Structures are given as C-alpha cells and as structure tokens.
Image (tube, rainbow, N blue to C red; front, side, top):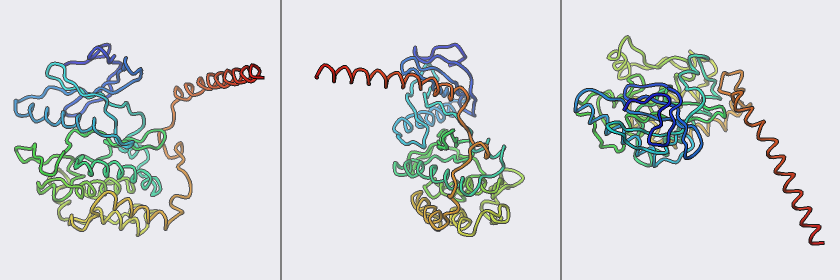
Amino acid sequence: MIVKAGDVVNNRYEVKSFLGEGATARVWKAFDRKQGFDVALKVQQPQGGTNIISNLNTRFVLEGKALLSFNNKNIVRVYELFSIGKANIIVMELLEGKTVKTYLREKKQFTPKETMIFAVQILHALSYMHKKNIMHRDLKPENIIINYDNQVKLMDFGIIQVSQTQDLTKDQSIIGTVSYLAPEIIRQEQATPTSEIWSLGVLLYQMLTGVLPFKGSDINNTALKILRDKPVPLSELNPQVDPVLENIIFKMLDKDMFKRYRSADSVIDAIGDYVNNNSKVMKHSIDKTERGLPTKTKKQKVKMMKSIPILIGMAITITVIAVVLILVIL
C-alpha cells in the first residue's frame, strides 16, 4: 500500500506528514479521528522475493502482536495492527524527543548521572520483555528515545525474538547491528537475556565515552574485535567514570555469557548499589537545557497556558454551586 499525506487510512487515520523510514517500513504522522490525538503509522514496504516477503511479513506481524500485549511506560505503545491489501500497518504512540543517537551526535557523551538514570529505565523495559520470554535483538542508540520529561522509550522491535528457540533466519545470517551484538550472536547462537545485557553494555559504554568499545574497518573486522579484543578502559576516555561504574559495564561486556549479569534486574540492583554508595553521582537533577535534552516545545507550553483559565473557571463554578447549596440548606 502506498501512503501519502492527505490519505485517510482504514477510515480512521488522517495522514499528516512523513516522519522517516527504515529498511522495511515507513513511518507517518497521522490523526486518529476516533481517539482525537496524533499517532504514528508504521507501514510495511514491499520487498522483492517470495521468501523475503514471507519472512518480513512474519517479523512485522510478530512485532505488532508482541507490542499490543505490552504495557510498560518505557516501551513504545501500540494501539492497533491491521492489513490493507498486502501491506501490514502498526498504529503506535507518537513519540516526541531525541534519540540517543541524536544526543550523542550533538553532545558527544552522557554524564555518569544521566547514563544511570536512562540505563535503569532501559533495564526496566528489558526486564518486562524478558519475563515474557521476548528479546528485542537490536538495542542501539537510534532505537531509544528520550522525551522532554527525561522518560526513555524503547522502540523499533522489527527483529524481535519471541522465544529462545525461534528461528526466522533460514540462511543462518546474523540478525542485528553488528557493533552491538554479543559474541554468541556473532557465532550465530540464539539470543538470550544475557545477550541483551551485552548489547546494553555496549550502548552504555558509548553513552559514557562517545565511542564504541569494538569498532573495526568493516563488519567482519568489527565482529572479530568483538570475539577477541578487550575494550579500552572507560576511565581513559572519560575521567568522570570511576572504577566501580567501569566494573559494572565490563561485567556486562564479559565475553563469557555465564560471567555476565544473569538478568536485567541484577544489573538494576548493581546500579542501585553503586548510586547508593556514590550519592554525589545523583546529587543534582539533570539540567535539560544545558545538556541538550529535549524540552517542552513552545506549542506545548502555549497549550498548557491555555488550559489554566479553563481550570480556574471550573474552580469558580464549583465554588458558586457549593455556596448556593449551603444557602438553600440554611
């Protein structure tokens, strides 16, 4: 299905503007006539080859169905999944803010304080998923958005794995973004929660230092570095990183999956202990303007200001009614 601005999809969604695209889908901003607010439409794009189409259709539907069952504040919300013709469409929450990728491009690094705040939220999302036996399999900066309230949202579940035995890769090709893949995934083993702990470890390393722990001249060279090399100590790249925090990240990046943290909850506990023993890390709240974090737009502020007179009017009306009732009773 070809979608364009001005279309009304499924007799409900008024397409307003194009937001972006990935390898298999395009995303549009639309107005939901029924609910009365803006949403995002993720529209699957046609691909060549019968086997490719079948595989991608399966993945797209798996993503939609899994997200429909989710109810977690740190995971993008999905409202509906439907098909029109040969196109599958996912209707989801419209997210406003900046991706971690954008933030890194603008500011280069996160402080340890910011990293811990956002890491815990990502971990809560992973914990929720893993308890449902679901793996994201593509944790990376562009798949994590931070809104103007400093709330993290995990998104883009296009290569989701809904069990530890699922296999949708008939050619045994590696699925995911190589720089963030655990050694066992490079060896084409199944993804497990500890594989995602590794991926998050790579992401946190990048957030704290501005660089990847394993980066080669090409995909194959990067894969070899993941399997063989040790990353440069974080403290050499960011003096704000102390030995305790560095050890947490390096435990997440242990090449032996059985020596890593066994679950997202165990990493949350480790971060909690670190923060409790290093109160200066969390002493001050994040200055969103100074650090370049998303802030409320002018339009959102105006909307809030417009609501104030309405609330005042409602309060006055309630007061008058209460006085009248008292006089009647007397």
